[in-house]
Length: 208
Image (cartoon, rainbow, N blue to C red; front, side, top):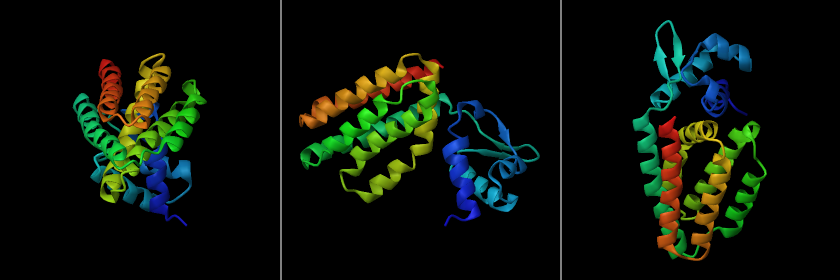
């Protein structure tokens, strides 16, 4: 059973921080307490954890500020993702551990989530698509490191969908290219497909 702090932390990280309408807003402990029905102490503890991860900024007498991801943060996120994801694809191909069936299933799940009302779920599956590739390598430290990017990835991904009409269809095509490359055992094509996907996402995000 989740503790109050764990419940507040999960709610804030998975629901509030990934909501495009919440970017730039201030949250108070009482507001969060009213929304999820727990006392303010565990909420304060959860906010301290999120502040330590640099996901919110605690401002005296104002509350927790959800600062939109800066251009620098977005660029660094995509650079880091590229390093991890290209390495994972290469290792999965080399070790013959490419999870083709799982990736295909996730791609089909994404295909059924068209429309802005499904944006958050679409991006959650998007993260799972890439995380599944990373996990196939079998490096637990790498998995934990990549999972630490999840909140920022989802925030950035949802914003990208809202910023560009047709982005969902483009993501599906880019994921298909990644899947085809790793399934065929072509590391060079896999690297190119992953780089292209991340570069496209970065352009959309920086264009605002």
